[in-house]
Image 1: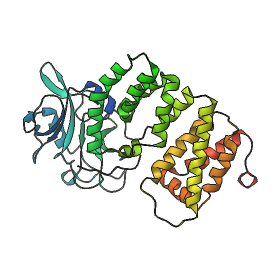
Image 2: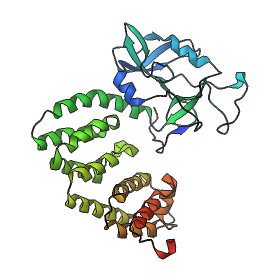
Image 3: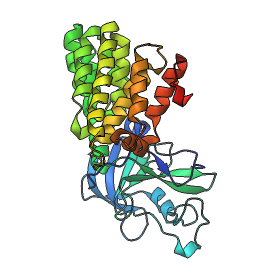
Length: 349
């Protein structure tokens, strides 16, 4: 299994890809069976079960899914070579996806197993390539006939953890919401907030706890779980702090932003230096915190915006990391803040 995490992006073979595609939350909600299978050398719809993540199917059993035969169609399902948008190679030269390790999201209906997502096998299948780009691959649709590969920024172990998190933590969330005391309720909900697919339920439930949620939110922001990588729940945490916190919490957020800028200012003198493995995650966290103030017309953001402009006018570490992870979004945010107060520096005017 692949352990390295891809950068935070969704890479499609072409921007023209559209139509039904894999949807993780639909798959987690509708699937009665989630299994890792291998097709074998011949694409005939006969697969061996390598792992069973959900459902009663046994490892080592054989499973017949005639819909999988569609993946032998070189007209619709092939991996493009060369630059995006290039003409496809001749039919016999087209490379089919590696089906030696697939994750299938299936739903049992009337005793028969079938695709769980949109009723389509291409929307309910992910696969792992043995060679080439790391990550989990799926299909998007080009027009009405041709499928294109989509690379998701996930690893197979991460996907497995989300399946387990959904199955184990959603029932716990339902029970935790019944607790009347907000302090005890917040303490029960906070540990469930590390599973990205259920953020849409865990964080609203945590916000309902009011001030009792604040210590847990600050712990998540200041001490992120290193195992979550780029899937840290930064944005829902910051939004929740704005929602349940008063002026004191907003002041703490501003101080947190300044402390992070102090960190990068201290590193600025050490250029040139190698990019730290977690630097992009730290910059992303800073981006979210600053972005949360852009539309709030808080005059305390003006000196922070000027600091950002100074630190990203580079060759500073922050400038290089920022350009690497997203084309200077921090500079754009700082300029938006200063523009709102008509306080642009003369040199930027």
